[in-house]
Length: 255
Image 1 (spheres, helix red, strand yellow):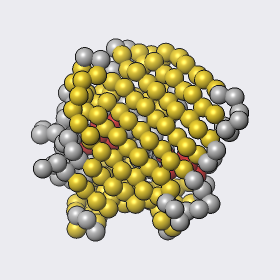
Image 2 (tube, helix red, strand yellow):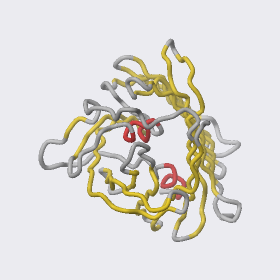
Image 3 (cartoon, helix red, strand yellow):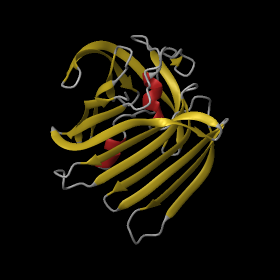
């Protein structure tokens, strides 16, 4: 698997897993009040691979607007390798339109530049279904490939970017296992999340903060502040290429 695929999944490593006991529906779990999501919030992350400064990621709640007759938050994310990381060129731009009342996406777009590869995904979410379209070209002169289909999706289905804000907005109980639907790579998965423990984390931007440590069904972990902000301050995952770590380096909020 390419290094880029691990970078893309750093913040949303979810999949199927066999569980003991009965996990709780995260879609049905109560939301935090007031919401931690604020228009204008911009989070910047430093991404390291084997302790090397590999890339940078920025997540930004841009503005409120209307899409398909629904009021949404327009959220953008951009990730790319650093100039010093010369042996690998990668850039990923995502955009989700999140209904702040239901915490469900209305639309999603994903554009990837992975060396010579170019690809884009567009999803329109409707009631009980999602229109999925993927266009890709492995090399500049290769023929373009197109995949289009309509998927049945349960209520509360998340995309690859909206899931971060969905998790931040939910009340989480220590030791609890949760499940929720996630649309990724053209498939709807039953994703799971375990709230493992509380832990204090030192962050150069925020100081020492108390966090909730969350583990995904594929073993990735991330730390979110155990306060009203619910900021993801650290993410770690292991891959065949070694450890990949993302650390929050800057927080900007609207005045």
